[in-house]
Length: 379
Image 1 (spheres, rainbow, N blue to C red):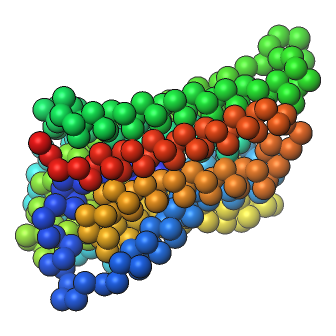
Image 2 (cartoon, rainbow, N blue to C red):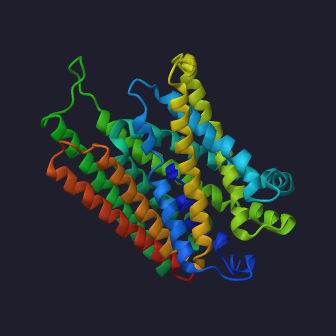
Image 3 (cartoon, helix red, strand yellow):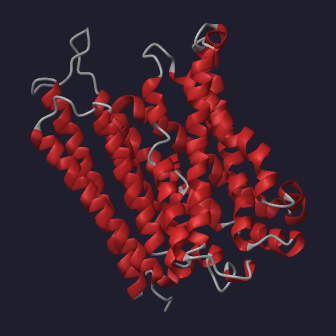
């Protein structure tokens, strides 16, 4: 995300494009107070850490695809198509002007991001918000920071700046391992110290599968950052031919990434609805409530991207370092607060809780190191 949110790492990875020079400063006559930048970043973090929460209020017999299918439709198609033209001028006209060669890489990595968002939704059902957010965000931050640099600026890896970023990636991965350990300890404590058994007596690898899905989803979600790193030509055309400010032009790339994600996430949900014969559930009582939950999730998801962009644009160079660290740190905290408040850790051992708290702290430390590395001047 999912965000997932998650779209947080994308702006960090595309810092050299979205935050270079004085692009933001030239978009207005008077520089807005920096406090508004931090407020927007925090609001975005709250949205990013909360978009999975409404899924907890769906009835337990609701098939996964009946909730997440409408969610992905809202996120990747309906919201960008209806609200995108309000956020940026020439949203649809920009694409023919850019050309297919510049669009395809964004769509391809957007497709992979859709796979990540889809598996993140699955991991929520397996391990809950707290663990899923921690592991997904940790993997997403690590991969979303290092992969675009390796693709576009490999010469920076052996520099001091690259070393700091690699250190931040390593710390984030340690945080992921610690969070995974917390999940295993939690599962053991809730099952009385033994493995959870299925009715047949075989081991039911729900926790392990959920942790694996959360990590894999983070790796795929990091493709949002890679997709965005290929969006330079799209942003240039949006700014030069349609007179959009730099921060507004990022929404054209965002729409492309989301549409690429629709090809994977939405089509998978269509496949599941057809295979499980759950299309008929949309005609049953309670469908309106499910659609409302999906819509709220989608609004929170896309609002995180919107407010992050608004906040970072008002922080200037700090948007890449301080703003990014504040956004990711607060989003991780918010996601875990929701997990604890919704009772996911009720009955879990103190040891498992101590491990997840330690994992959160380590993840936040890694984010801060990455923020510092991205703020350093290129060598």
